[in-house]
Length: 337
Image (cartoon, rainbow, N blue to C red; front, side, top):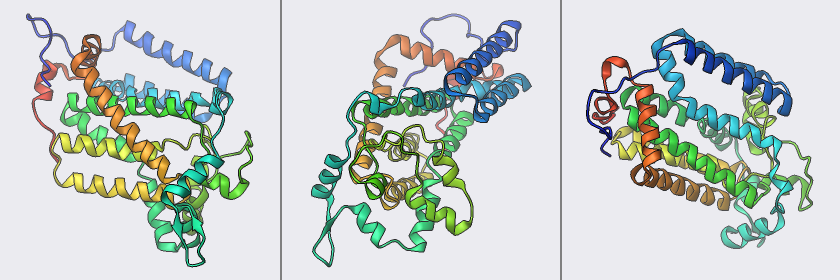
């Protein structure tokens, strides 16, 4: 997309200098977030770490300030995800448990040697082995590090590409969060452990990923799922949507060999989601659909909606080094590995 600014004249200033106004804004937002989060969600060390990291990078130097202002997109995602604890989706719509299980079995059921039809999750649970346990855990660990690492690469190679990816990622999550509330859904492990009865106070569970923790004698996944925002948010699988978004922009910006790695990780996460009983195949397909919709929405808004395009351009300017001029200079080079 052409990134030239709307009006002719002198090149607009780039970067975000440290002034009394910007300093007070950063501190004010940080304090407001801590007060609201602590009062509504209860104090957690994660909140303090997030605010501390933001302020350290904001005040440390011009390069770190530009970096953290760009990655504010991902901070918004984290805050929204964490805030979902305040509004559990099961309060607003009936949780799909039994109907989803039977639909999965009717569409993707696997007939065993005993003649019984089982869901893919049940099939893999019966055929679990150490090697796929380890492989599934390793793939699942990539679900957030992969998009963050990819975003970091794009940030230093092409600011426009970075914001296209980061804002697509955010919109994909918006779409997924909406579906969470429209169609609350229990994960496969819930049916395995609790049957079809609804229990609103069910804690998070590592399911098949617990075998990875046990093998390495660690508590990585148990720690992650202890902080789960909502057990009944299995559909769509945003684990499936994230690597798809990465791969799309990897292909868009012609990252060559890196795209093969992205495709392998994407496929591995999709398999691991089902293998570990965290998601049905239906959840994965819904996640893929959310990814496609989210990317499409961003591309449409960026090309067709003026205020949104201008907002993104201003954000690009805010994180572009002052010596680099306008974002056109940054965006003119396609990022390559």
